[in-house]
Amino acid sequence: DTGVSQNPRHKITKRGQNVTFRCDPISEHNRLYWYRQTLGQGPEFLTYFQNEAQLEKSRLLSDRFSAERPKGSFSTLEIQRTEQGDSAMYLCASSLAEGWPQHFGDGTRLSIL
Amino acid sequence: GENVEQHPSTLSVQEGDSAVIKCTYSDSASNYFPWYKQELGKGPQLIIDIRSNVGEKKDQRIAVTLNKTAKHFSLHITETQPEDSAVYFCAASMVPDSSYKLIFGSGTRLLVRP
Image (cartoon, rainbow over all chains, first blue to last red; front, side, top):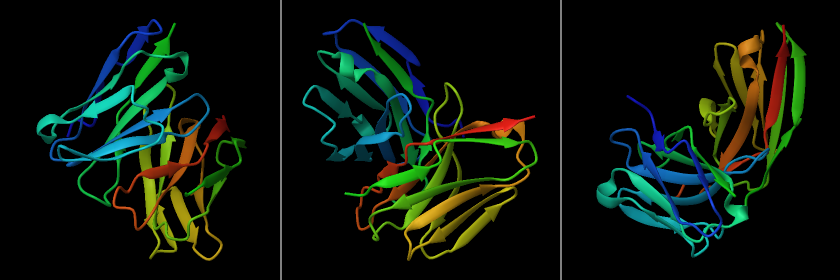
């Protein structure tokens, strides 16, 4: 059991650029969550997948954000036209099924210049 | 929606002493309460969780208590060690909400002094 893997660990980009993050959940976990964590705060829910279906999106997820989970395995989170306010740690978590504990990856830290 | 408040924001204890972190939640429908430990540069690590049909759960030096009537739950760490130093987050999961998304508190920075 290798745990949740996120890449890249750090991403520095200029305002207005597009960025994409990848999350590989724990094998056989059918639920995958994305959260965002800003400095000094707890993680905030963004969206989640049950297998390949994206079932809920937070109002924090503007139309510049898109997430996919093709084939119900890894997931990608893309941010288009990045803004200063997008600077944060983006965390991915997976769980075996609904109601099971969520296990987090080490996140991707995004810095917008 | 659900709101989780966590106190204190920082806590400093002497090695060997106990540490207690408290959280309150607003939605009485919440029924799952995990606690996470986050070290610098790492993601949150699940350390213990409790469901609403249980009042207390213990795992070695860590215990969690839940008071459904008062809508608060607490993390207790006994015989603290320097490696317990980290940021601790409580969370609540809303039910009936099929997403089981977690609503987090704002965190407690625990410092264990050798």
